[in-house]
Length: 419
Image 1 (cartoon, one colour):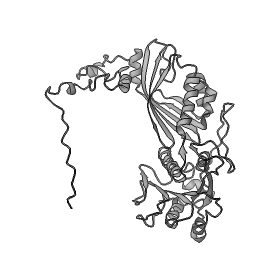
Image 2: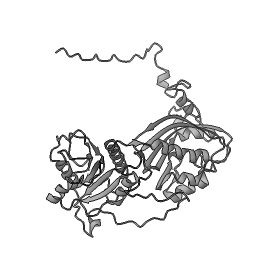
Image 3: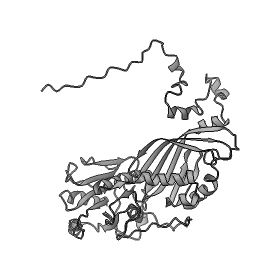
Image 4: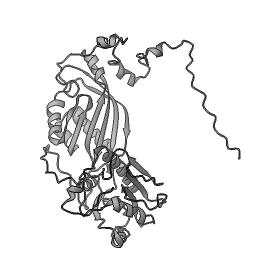
């Protein structure tokens, strides 16, 4: 059942988190708190015409107060975000929705992001064309008056639903499994970081499409890469990140959470500890709304301890080649988080810490002859798929009949309309 948004001091009883004390932050000399004013455009993930006003976004929900984190994140993205309380709805609220464009300047548009009861009302009232309304984004509306509703073609519509809501609207929508209503609001007990992050990316994508904004996330990521890997400047690297970043080198669980940990990690365990021989080769890059995914090959000679990859392992002098996938999220023109994945077994094989032939006796007795891992071959095969054999670890693949042509099944013939 959807929570009652009417404000009261007892909000915690119905699922609101108590206000958290502000955590101290450690900043580099050049890492300043992002500021937003309507008169000036902050650094963001998008490029907008010079001297243009920040696009307006009205956020509406049922309480008199609202999640300040969402409003701040919108401002960091370059939007002029204001809050419009639902205030029990009614004629006054409905009329206010129809007059949000009254003070817009020439050429300006606006968007609405609504939650709960406010979302239900907005989906109903704004079905008719509204001057300068570019986007309507609804989070877990308590009802959908007309699931088959068709909205104006120039209006970007998006609906985020909890899987507990049995709505199936005809307009664009996403359902998020395993979460409850309220999953996108940081100050509610129902908040779910993964679902909220995914919904946020889709929301930002809709806003950019509606306002015709060009993403610039690749340039932001390139600047961060240059400072952290090539220039090796810890303070400069922090200047490319938000105030509350986190970095996770997944196989070794190294990195940091928050500005202090991330800065200390870069300063003491990353920048000075990467071998001078380290080289990076980009294989592919996928650019999303607020994320960049890089596939790359890292090569180095293990001449010094390398904490992010081989923590506490003394130098072995071995040459290492690693296929790495790097997933980064950009928020408000700065790097928010970084997830780095690679095959750690491959690294351990290359430095001599893991021998594929050393199979535990309990598995030898069951016929296992070698561990299903490889070394540098894995990186080689990423660069050139034909450089290494395929399926060599699958005995049934090698034992298949010599004459088996491996032919694909016949494709079904395309239907022909004979009418």
